[in-house]
Image (tube, rainbow, N blue to C red; front, side):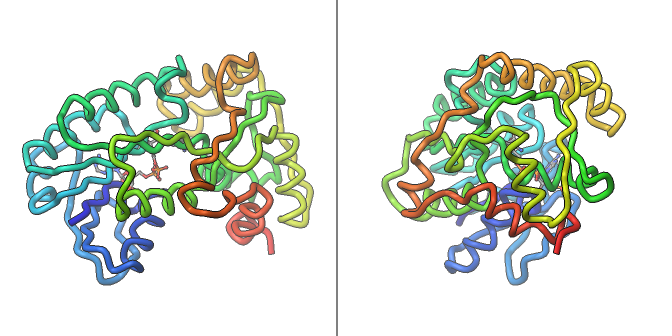
Length: 280
Ligand SMILES: NC(=O)c1ccc[n+]([C@@H]2O[C@H](COP(=O)([O-])OP(=O)(O)OC[C@H]3O[C@@H](n4cnc5c(N)ncnc54)[C@H](OP(=O)(O)O)[C@@H]3O)[C@@H](O)[C@H]2O)c1
């Protein structure tokens, strides 16, 4: 039995559908949002209520682990170990083992905790998800035909979350991926000015990238309800990207090798998601 956490989120919902399609024995962990996949065993978990974890893990041999807040992850690893789980497939972040960005460091600590647990592991380390243009920037694109960021002209090899989910489905269900880590990128590293063009083409109207300075970017995030410390992390990583201090423009071939096809391009992503961004 595979337990999929974050099953209603960007990566987990696509993964769950794929595992159900393949007929894998799977249980979906639901938090607040209802699940929109039929015919799946569900359980209710809340990382802030540790008592909800053991019942969810009963009879589980493989844990697919992700959370919105990295702080939740070590207790879930401990609960999995206690419940007799054999393997953890963990969503970490791009170059978590070498990058000095704080979120990467936090993910790396969780990776090390999993490695120290004695359970088998696979780490999937996606670069920025293309879907951030829908989840984080979607309202601005729909309402103002614009998106706001402070990353300057830095190029980032964004990956489509659907590819991450497909890779997760493969490593969860096929042999040969135990105790391996995969940094996952898309097929190209693009700047926001190039993203602006791809979005405009797909949506059939001009979309502008509005470049903000660090302070305006952080204040904008806070005004949108992002917690102050996380807004500070994002400001920091954008500054590092602008200064060429990260690996975010790096291309990797793991999506191609694991799925046997090219990763999804940003242009294709824009065409697929055009309806949810106010396009045709
Ligand atoms: N976005 C990126 O560019 C990017 C890049 C690399 C790595 N990552 C990593 O990917 C992970 C996020 O993946 P995602 O974008 O698929 O997540 P997401 O869409 O934000 O979904 C988060 C999931 O976690 C559940 N959840 C939230 N709080 C919970 C709690 N207290 N207890 C139990 N479940 C809870 C949510 O359920 P409810 O909705 O019901 O609360 C939802 O199913 C993070 O670890 C992030 O660091 C993201």
